Image 1: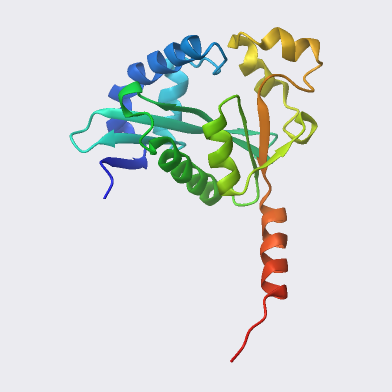
Image 2: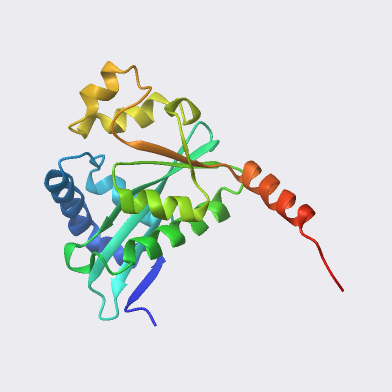
Length: 194
């Protein structure tokens, strides 16, 4: 049994917005890598629109968060801002949050490609387990608004100097059409005995 409640965020969770923003900024500084800065209004919009997942302890202490962003008329979506409060790290909570936001993403945007950028090995591992594949930046959204979100990252100059073709983050993509083809191919090659 989990010590956490992981649920789609709603208006009752707005009071956690400030803590979420502060932890995102603090974590980026400690790691020395970027997590795109977001203001409180942006986070609250995601919560109110049902595009976020929040993790709470059983006594309602904030423990983690992640949200969905959409790009190019929903052709691409990103699971962004994955953050776990320091006292709850290394307990498998990030994986639980990522699984919940991934399911929410597939439900709300069943035909969209889902992508993420990360420098964190644990997130790369979780993404791989969910069916994400490493890809070049050219396979991600080309929406300039997305890349503008990277401006708050300390590595933005690297991204800019490389003409938005790579940076220190690993890009990973889940393509639902490719996943369906792979699933069908596995099913077709399976031998059944009766």
